[in-house]
Length: 96
Image 1 (cartoon, helix red, strand yellow):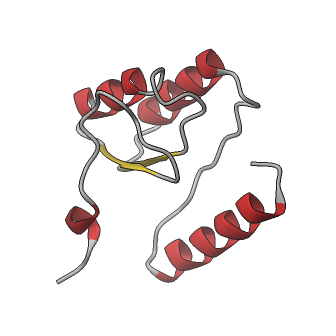
Image 2 (cartoon, rainbow, N blue to C red; image 1 turned 180 degrees about the vertical axis):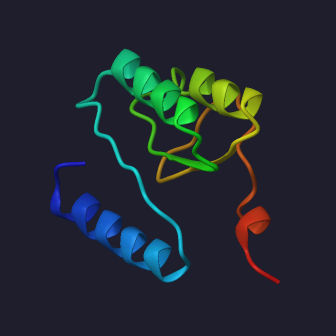
């Protein structure tokens, strides 16, 4: 999340979310899978509605998807696949 591309993507995402009336909470785990999992758990406890996940390690991220699904939170896997998980198809998020 430190590179120019990630910051540009985040800025664009935040701007569009604001236009749509949504609040964005972002966290950077600095490449630590356990820290990322803890951050996801904290956001779930805070009541997020959708998790946009940029997994550090695709095989470790399935536990984050499982936790989100258990909390009835939709999950978008951004940029990288999350292996062995049930992320939501993008069409679930498009407005009619």
